[in-house]
Length: 304
Length: 304
Image (cartoon, rainbow over all chains, first blue to last red; front, side):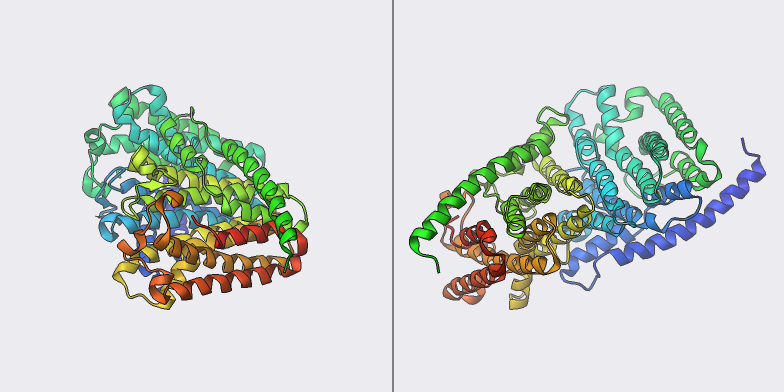
């Protein structure tokens, strides 16, 4: 274990890393999106607002940090999948918030896309962002890596082994029996698949070898599940101002959550166990994986 | 011009080509889709129904025929983009039919996806099919072509230079002034972009040189626009039984169409002019482009 002074230095270094990465990411997201003045402007305004108006940027940061873990320094090649995964995430939030899905009016403290722009625009903005996410992968260097990134992102985005499958299972849950198998499917796929893909794509972009990719995949799977369990706990306990979205929705919508199936204490214990397993998967990366470790820590120990 | 006996032989040969290609395509679409028994089954049933329950398969056939035009014989490599473009098309129909977009209850003589499965499933089935479409491109051979195909499909699917931009402009039209520029944008992008990409991707998969790709792109752009003009004309004149969808909807929804802006006769003349231009673009391909010519002819001279 690190001494407290050492851990303080690591955190300070990580803050510098975070700020630099987030600033560059914002710039690259801006550049990747269609211009606000380009026709049809309303569609592009909706897409830009959804992507540029905040968010923790966890997925692209995971991607960047994973590339750094493999090569020991920032990897320009990892920007393509980092931008892609954030665009994909933004699309998924727009569609998740729609009346026919989670029916949310607030996101990050602002009206959701369909509240601000109407449902037609929200559906199309999500569709357009998904296409734009895949388009980013073509910028991968060397070009041959685009194919491996495409496999990873498409699987994590789709069904049955990705986000859309998980989202569907989550929507089915109220009418179906709560079982550990169903809960595991929802949690592994709804959020976990894209979080895991973010880490793996960072590795691919940095030219990781198969053993490194396998460890990044294990890390991503464990931390992705831990993240979703913490999400469930925050929905129960969280205060809406900090969350920027409506709290307590899971229970009202009778959603299948970790605390509802296993209880509060067991859920906290599970998240900690997964966090430790995620850290073990990174052991062999040494100091280069420090940003990845710091990110993982924040994903589990957060208040919103 | 061909003699009538010669033209009869060409049509008969094309029928054989069509039947073989459609049968193989059906088989490959089935194999690409998640199984009906795989969890979450309802999502996968919706995706399978949307893709497997018919349709003219114009886009994948264009892709296959373009590859054949380049190489002079069927190109196994062109299956990946052919399957991809049909999955993309199926997703676009599901989302276009949603209540917040065209609000259609019937498609190909059957209830639309949201009528049969509900809106939640329809949104997610469309999202999943888009991801699956991009996933197909990873199967391209040699793998390095996956990147060029990705650029083509992502641009044609997105905005401002693709389908989602065109669909948005089409939805905006009732509230905005009808101008030739706006109509051209809608028609070139809503349907034309993906039709054009289908032909170009066939060329890429077959290893076409830049000059061949340029001619396929010109062909695709002209025939794509002709196709949409004929679509507008059929919506005015067509009988719903042959169309398998509701006729006369454009006028009731006050959609911007070629006949509404330029009149009936001028629209027919424009479609014929575009058809001739499309054929000119294929001149240098010789006999190998016969399936492509036959397909183009059917896209313009059709009743549904």
